[in-house]
Length: 494
Image (cartoon, rainbow, N blue to C red; front, side, top):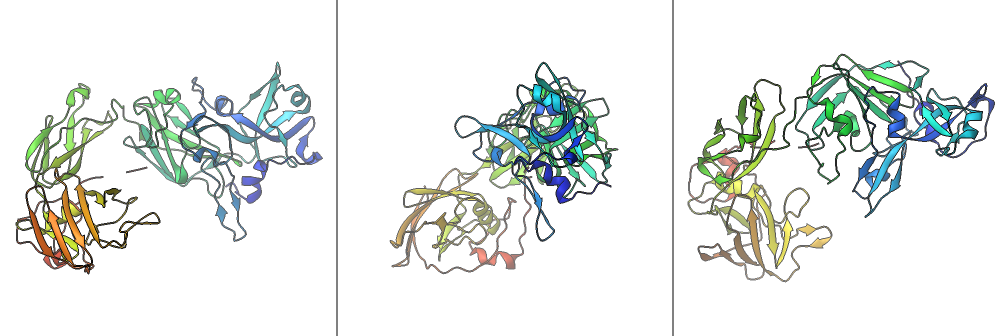
């Protein structure tokens, strides 16, 4: 078993020049670190003839995060940056490139002198546990297969495979990865003889998550273009081994059986429809001829051919997953929206409650689908990263709501609110007046005046679409007593 100590995992990346000592040499050999491009770093490790590219990143800062980890004074490992141990160059518009890794090397003193580009060689005071041997021909460095003095570590763990990742065409998640050290590279091997070198940020993520594009998905969620040439041949192959490269050498998880289903499309197109009872269709022309369709959406939905049928479906977004029962091909997903022109809520006593003729479940579904609220002419997005102006559980209007450091309600006492909700074709508008406790509520059909206060009860409501029976309008605080539960109809990542 390898020992991942502070010296083994971090010392080789202390990049300040140190005085040469006899301990750092072996005869005519000298040891140091070099900036090794990914293509050169992996060249002797793989049978893959397609070089490993640099990583282009359009994001502002992640590619710069190359600080290495270290063991803290408390004895706990303090992780480095997302691109620990790499080197980079700045690109246009704030983006940049991760070019490769800063890794220990062994080189003859005479060869070092011959190098036209010394690749930021920084001498080490001690011989490293693992290193890349360097030879020089015509003034250019060539890097051999990594020398692991301690021998390859055998990992015990497990690996799962997904072909429905947001971050690439395939994603594997490995449990039992090397701990207390930075990961400089990963090699994925298949039983068909494929070798695939992985890079920081685009491929290698935290906690054993590794993803790559294989020629179908073009971009990941941040807009970064996926480089896929090196990985295209992985489609339809079966992963057997995953090797992690650290400053201590190789650590390998073997004996895996992770099939990478053949990809043919990144997503599938599904028509939108009306909520309640009905049907919609999806484009099955992209499916291979030998693809045996099995479609799933949620309870109350069925799939036959290219038709999705449903009963009593609430308004909102849904996801159709089409799988190949034969297991050869990757599943594909498509999103669609079921909508209605009715508004199942009204404003009363400081909150949105079920409208006359609407059920508590109808109202709860509306609340969970609120996408934006406009206050005094300014629109605020709802959701996890937005402003909570209307509580998605209780319906309470939060007069102390903030957007960043900004108060949503400016203290003027009278406000017009416009609510947008996914699946609801009409916006709901109402006015509140803190001073006079008068509230005017407006829909596209009618305008009514009701009494209101700013007080609210902290109650819970169903938070997912499921059709209920229409009933009398009641405040949402009665949901807990009514015992209504719901089922969430969608499945991330990353």
